[in-house]
Length: 262
Image (tube, rainbow, N blue to C red):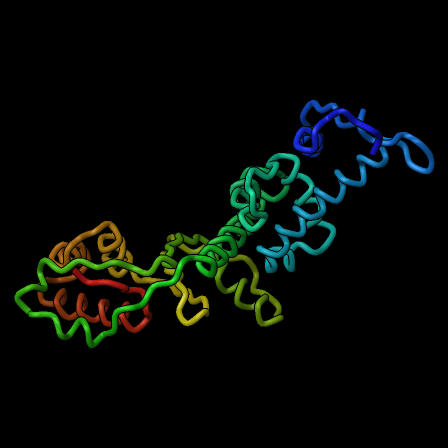
């Protein structure tokens, strides 16, 4: 760099503006002499910044990268970086809008499963990075006074997420994870509800039946056990509800997603 009256903080801010495509005076502080001009020197920084952001997208979306291949993913990254400059202090959180970008940008919007695959991978990354909490065991549930069950409420693990998937996205992800050939994209007759969570430093996800999805949604909104049973009444008979509700709570406890009962 040339001698400059700019303080270091201002130099950093001007370089950042340049990298983000904003008006900047940073070129006046860059050496313009052989073997590289000021523009070429700045180009090195701009290219390195863009490549690092694309690398971050690839790190978070390895299966999407596997589907698209190096060249198409690089082109996707270039377009996304141009449309979405980073606004985060940590590069870990860069790329949250990728699924939405795929869903509205040609030619990717012609393959809707790509947006779902990106959303699944981003959600799995959120699950893995979420705070930890000590789960409640099934034994703790059975120890509750039966008279208190109707008003019982539950707190869930911070890693818990829910997704609606319209395509066989999970099957594609699982095949790619095994280095196997993925199935052809297939749209389901109806959207499927999926639950994702972390247990013992391992991510898990599975589909849910409609009644479980309704019960979990109610529980996550703070519903009592009695209100969760009411949510099940939309798809089950009155005789079926108690056993199904108890079965779901046992499943949730065994999965480690319940962390408190009140």
